[in-house]
Length: 193
Image 1: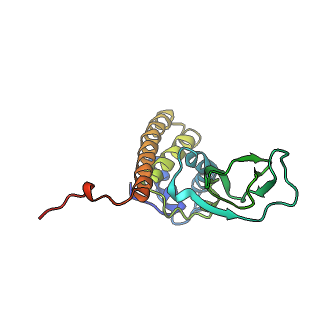
Image 2: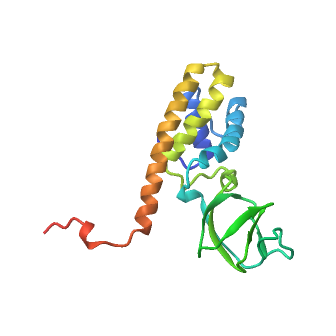
C-alpha cells in the first residue's frame, strides 16, 4: 500500500483489503461511513502503542489553577483537551497527574505529551509514517472484517499484519528520535576520497 496522508485514503485502503471499491468521499456508502467512525474510535489505541514523533506535543505552562488539587503539591496545571498521556516532563520536575491536571511544586512546567488522537479526527493524517498508516489500516480491517464481511480469517490475518507493521512503526520512530537527538560525530561518517 502507498503512503497515505488522509483518513479518506485509509478508508480506501481498508475497503481494498475487504475487497470493495474505493470511494471519492468518506461518507459515500454505509461501509465507508462505518469505517470512518471506526478509524476515529480505534486511532487512540493504535497511537498508545508508542511515543510517535508526529503525535508528540510540547507545552509550557506558567498559569496554575487558583486552587491546587493536591495537598502534596503547591500548584496544579490544567491538562490540554487533546492530552493522552505524558511523554516527558522537562527540568526533572516531580509531578502527579490528578483529576485532569498536573500537580507539582514548580510555578512553570515544560513537558511533551502524547495526544489522545483528537488532532487527527479532522481526517488529516499528515506526518504519520508509512508503517504507522499501514498498522492503522490493518487494525481497522481486523475490527471491521467480521461485522462487514463475516470473514474471521481476514480478521486474523489483518491482526497479524497490524502487529508486524506497528513493530516497524515503533522501530522507525525510535530511529528518527535518536537521529534527531544524536550530536554530530565525525567518526560515524563514511568519507570517500
